[in-house]
Image (cartoon, rainbow, N blue to C red; front, side, top):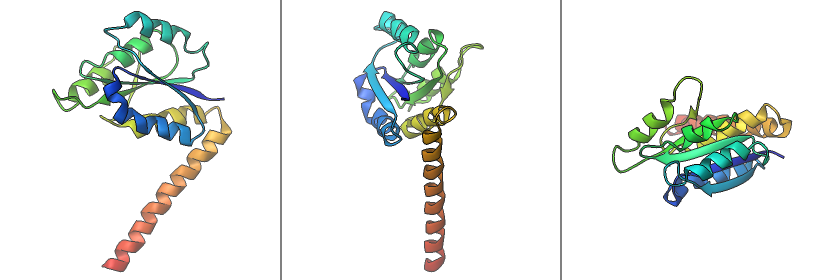
Length: 162
């Protein structure tokens, strides 16, 4: 069974993270969501990351705003793939979060999606899991076909209108 951890720096990140959780569940992926802070609960973050593989996780998605150190701290303590989800903040519209996550030092990578890109964070995790699980790969192919079909339908509708 595939299992993804979704860690957010604050419960206030939940509106963005909800789409992440829902998308993962639509693909039949087990999700565990937690609130942990790289700055306020660093020991808990380190313990979680060190034990993540043994606890059955295969990918970690970490949502954080402002200084946004959570994804990098998690990545420092695990060899599992970590996907950073920058959260839009009031300070710089999330640019601070994006830059904090994407500018990781060499050797400790964090895959990074767009600011508030909760759905893409889930889809990135799904792509990683699809390497190992055929049923997830098949669902992903169906999902992509559905998106393509939707664009083709919209084009036909446009052609009829004009």
